[in-house]
Image 1 (cartoon, rainbow, N blue to C red):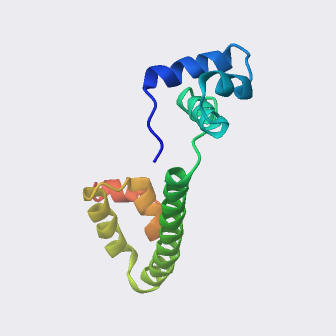
Image 2: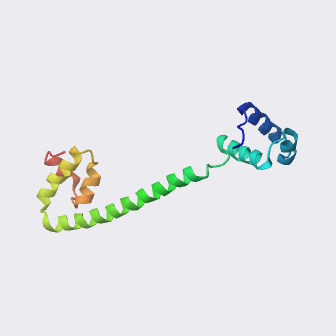
Image 3: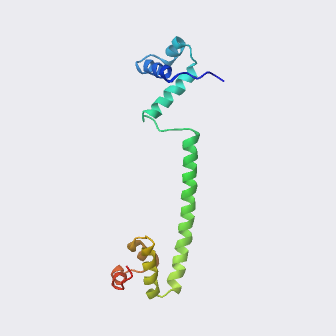
Length: 130
């Protein structure tokens, strides 16, 4: 396993590269491998915000986020079908009660009304449920 370089050494090498010297020249002068200095340079770009992070960590986060999006989209499709079934079976007066329960759970009233097919939010407010 290669020996780790002190952070001061890395910073000095990066300062030399930033000053305009080539990576090949700096690596030869300091006696380190060129790929090592290239990796330090790439990481420096990420640390300074000049380049987005890449690699396994960000790839894993992106994969997890995409998986969660897929799950939420499937859940949304299921809920839309359930709402369509509720609209056919549950009378409008009972839907007002459901909107009140959703509001009590923290769902915004307008979204709850639209989701349950209650088109007049004023009527829900007038019933005193919200």
